[in-house]
Image (cartoon, rainbow, N blue to C red; front, side, top):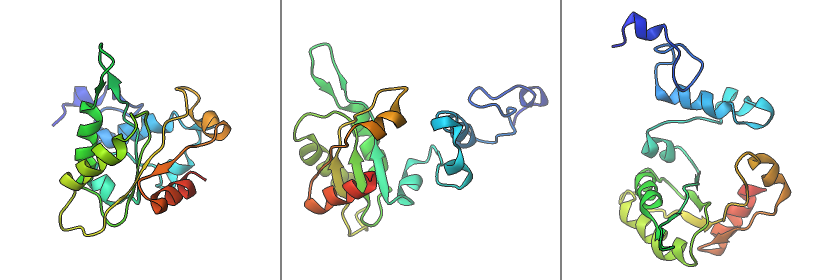
Length: 173
């Protein structure tokens, strides 16, 4: 429970008064809406843009999951998969139906099919019979220019199956 003094201060994540936003979710949405092109928050108003800390719940409602977690490299130039593996384990539990999963980060050749597909299989709900369509699509944008870069540069996709690649192509069109 917040005290009245706490409620009178602004939230550190959004412009709402602390206590008025009621959750981190609203704060994250507020922050996300501020980075949309030209301040467009139509997706937010229409309910197409949401944020939550409940990864599994969010993924279970999604037909497409875009994984945009950077692959870090250590001092010896070796990839450190800790963050992206952790994210993959977390969202795998929420996959439902025939979700399209797109790994949108730079990865070593073969990582999607040899590392992430088995990781998804290991951590997904065993009661869900359909397997996700998995795709690799390296990021082709720079911070601060995401939306203009998406329009400017062609998008590359490589599906673990032909159907996965076709679904991803349609998604990005």
